[in-house]
Length: 366
Image (tube, rainbow, N blue to C red; front, side, top):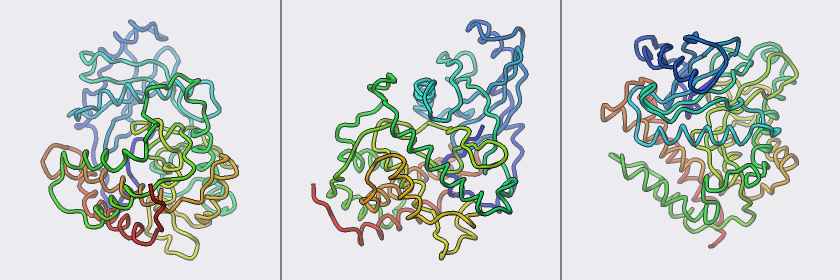
């Protein structure tokens, strides 16, 4: 499983860190085993627990008991405000996706009792697959076969097309978000969050905010949003052709506009005639261009994509604020995750880009 929130910012030069001390005791087998007993989960006694990965927001452990292989997802040791509620929200989305055609980890069990592990957490089935975040290169056949590699991009887009088309009301997700007035609330919602930790100027952000307040999307149709959709938050099945194994990390999931997930993918996606060597944590060589992905999404989802520029402004605006939140925690000494220190310059970059895009995108007045 993978948790690497906003790792479109991942720096390949960052040295690996020893996570053993940082994660010690976060998934105590004795406490976990007793709770699993109370839930009637498979097996007896203490489970086998192994740390898998961690990111800016959560920690992931492999849990094996009674022949069942699962993954445990929980907040970091210093639980940020609201993160326990986020765990409950994530599990609700995963549970709602059980039985749909959206690739995801099957939801197993949720623990809202913070006395067990010091936080809310949940178990999901372990996904047998791979994530680009865990590998230095594309696995075979995708490293050398650029035609096969292009399929990874289309599989990525298929994932959010399916997610956005789930009948969220029929799946019991009423009240997860507030789809009415979704776009009208975006600026105030994110600027309010920024106000809680803002300690410096982010050039371009105010200009983007003014643009977003004045624009009305013409074809908004609510659906399930992932909120941080990218290669870092999906897993693929082993071997070719490219097949999506699971969409993971739903901590920013809501009911909103799925086209914002599409923009989240595209905002840092380089075309073939652009520099693809230093853009992100993956090698984009052989990948389709942005326009190809736009048309694939439109054909697969049935949604119009002609207003994507508006969504790109909103995506960059939101990304800047989310990253600034992580960097602010580092600046204030409230985080023990060294990866967040690299969010500072990148947050400024996204803010500037949001302002630049706003200046050249024609307004559609509210």
